[in-house]
Image (cartoon, rainbow, N blue to C red):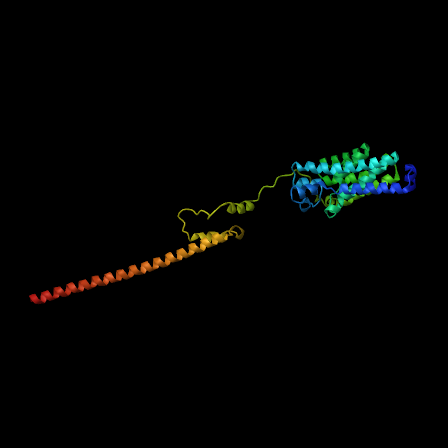
Length: 324
């Protein structure tokens, strides 16, 4: 097979191997530029692989974030595949026009490897559908028609994107053999299709069990009521207003019923509270002392009144005795 390639290319094996390695390295590192990871980590500051299915692909990015940045992900994943294939075609055409088709599959394979297993992102990449679709368009319109046609029909009819993706990976080797009938090219197409199916192995299991998620439009998540309640106390200054007519003593019981995370006080508020309690205790003690003094004064006044009455009775009794 390799002899056939070298004979058809009319070049030495060393130059052909050097060209193949160069194309493979460039295509791989182009594939490592994962649009979903780059946009989510460095623009949105929230890695898409921490959400949803954990996949660094277009579908999970759209479900998680949505918005116009989805177009950036689409363009980045498609453009890198186009650039990798174009570079391979340029190198192959400079060597021999007969190697152009083979170079497309060769570059496409390593671009998908970079997308699925990027060395720049801990080998956690996407599943290669968008980049693979762009590669199919670059290879041949007949290949793209079968791959994309079946994908769109199944995805739109069932709303299972993974089902259309499995069709793309499964049909790719068959349509390649039908169009080219070349053993080496077909082997590369089998590897590409097998990688796509292997990356979707979890989806295949969920499809068989009936638990696979259908594609839905992204909906902006609203703030949860608990988050709103937690944000309100932080935005207010000072103490919470109390309804008129309620005693200040109820303030502690109300604060004790609030969650711990919403009832945290600053050191200044602690100082104000302790000062308020000390003043309240002093006022209470002073009030008790005043009440005690008033009680003593009333007792003294009663004793003086009783003494005056006794004195007046004695004077009356003496006056009656003198008259007698």
